[in-house]
Length: 343
View 1 (cartoon, one colour):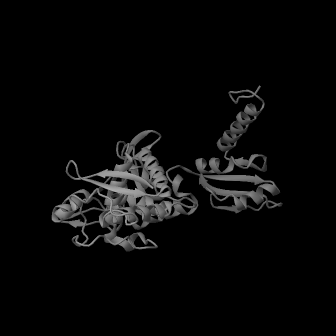
View 2 (spheres, rainbow, N blue to C red):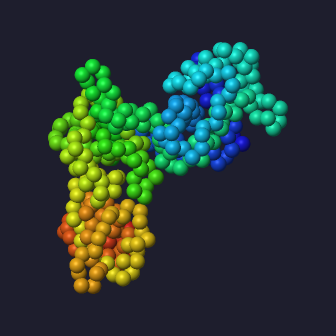
View 3 (tube, one colour):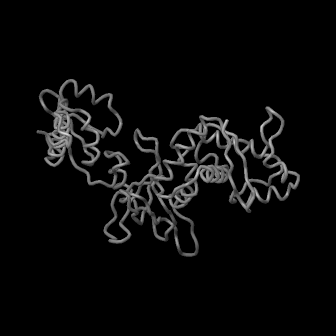
């Protein structure tokens, strides 16, 4: 067992959790991953405090995330569930139970663990660690998830203003970008264990046109409601069409038509290499070995560079040249030239 001390509320207040090594390892992995995505270093105790806070709030909307198991019941003596910051709530709870002030960090007799408040918090953390990746992401970024749901529902009406749009700041390539978004859905990506916010977006600086847009929930740095109408019928169709042929993760990349000729071995690989695989269909070639994909060039490149000599891109030329360069550099590396450029 490992001990983790989470400080909260007023100076000196703390919560001590005893977690088994498996749970400890899982939340430590998530801490490093989520902190990197949101560009905000987060100590392990801060990570646990945040996920308890979000899970506490999430209990209000248990059915929205459709968890396979309910959250652990909270200790007796607390008020009914409401959306409150966990730190303030814990302080109020302790103030209402002065007998716990001395017991809050004291271990009970062997085998009984800590006080019920500690056992409840540990149970929440353990329940979190046992969930699939996409559910852990929803719980950790629950406030963003709720904001998305408000906009997706058509917005809250306040006077004549309608919150049907979102201001989105997200990290990409080591930089922060800002987009105004008409949201379409918040869903998991095909064959990917993450959650993506999709819709039509336009760059906040240039303000150019509405284009299909998707961003992973874990890469959003800030999210806020914006006044404005949501998607129109034709705009929904535009997003639906883009989603029908391109993996969500590559929705913002321009679509292209890709034609690929496969060897018999390549056709077999096409069936079992499913990660990042675009939708495809066979054209009318006599030997039925040519496949057409309507996707982004980025997704096609990531998918096809695993096939080696078992697949050859016929078009577009830009993708064909990109793969040629990839294999040329790879061959150079194997020929002993350290810079991968060949001899």
